[in-house]
Amino acid sequence: MRHHPWILLGFAVLAGLAVPLWYGGSEALRLLHQVPWPLFVLGPLLALIAWNFSALRLRLMAAGRARLGQREALATVMATECVVNATPLGLAGPVAYATLLGRHGLRGADGAALYTMDQFVDLTFFIVLIPLVVWWCPLWPPGLEAGAMAAVAVLLALLALSALALLRFRRILRWGEALGDLTGVAPTARRRIGRFALLFRRRVHDLLAIPKPRLAAIYGVCALQWITRYSVLYVVLWGLNVPLAWATVFLVQMVALSAGQIGLLPGGAGVAELGSTALLAPYVAAPQLATAILLWRFSTYYWHLLAGAPVLLLLIGRRGIRNLQRRVGDGP
Image (cartoon, rainbow, N blue to C red; front, side, top):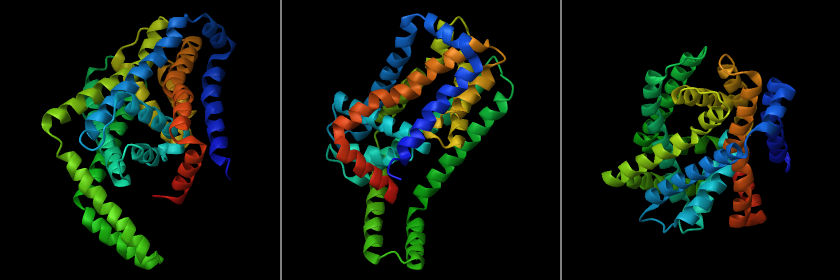
């Protein structure tokens, strides 16, 4: 069982490559050899820019709690992204985030609260952006409208659940204590979990009290980060002489990556490629589309693994990675 995560990651990589290669066939491979080298570099460069925006956002959120330079924050973001993309549904992401921030003096509850704030900012940003893009989108691939509306509904539900959890935190703790009595969890363990939960709640409230100018800066950097990341496929298609509206390409990525979580493979591999191929197939020739999907996923998935893994290994070492695997396996 020790090698199970690596086997799952191997399946994800193979599934992600198999879909576009099957769809485009040998023509896609020939076209891939003819792609000009700047197009190969541009995607990873945009990913690096997006990482730097994400690192700046981390520094803004952690201001006053930890002294993070841009280089330290960038390393933390890259290593966390690697872990997120290497595990199903990104389940190890919060543990990796808190572990890496612990190297800079932040307690586990502080790191968990920062991760929660980070996700909250993303949720609210997408809830605002998606309806605007839907309204602006000049081209509707078949079925995309329903998918976009479903994505909005899911994000609204997640936000509502997050807000309810924060508002009813004490009641949730009481339910947890009652459940602990029923399941036989040791009182010492329940007290330790309760102390962590209360400290986490205080840290979340501290983060929600961030001054408005800094909060506006956090959202501004968040917008730059996601607009940069979601421009990779648009730039790749443009480089392959397939001009599509940015809003259309954004929605295709949004629906495909959301659907990718259903597949339960790391990074949504296989399903994300299949979804984006199905949505863009009516407008892009098969060889060009397969080549575009390969270049897009390299920059937004494989590159995250290749560039983030050495950083993760450098930060916490092999023993730290094994400890991280144990912590994820043992649960929160």
